[in-house]
Length: 82
Image 1 (tube, rainbow, N blue to C red):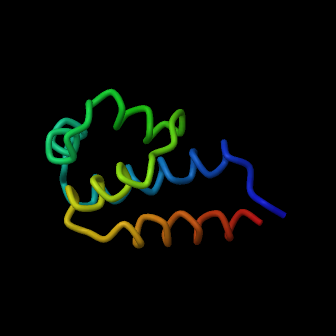
Image 2: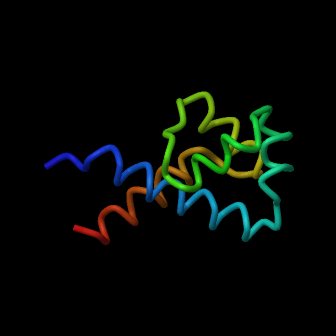
């Protein structure tokens, strides 16, 4: 059974916030490095928006990680909820 979009957005946002804060990066700094608006980062972290593939890659690069790690952490958290 497929996971609904809102749940994916929420979990991805939690993963993004956790990884960002673990790296000591502010939303503003992440936005500047990823060439995004700070309010968009906030929307992502609150699970109100879902990133495109290019945005996902930009976020990962700005945090010095790989986009697959963001996806992996998200799917792991989704699996824990099942």
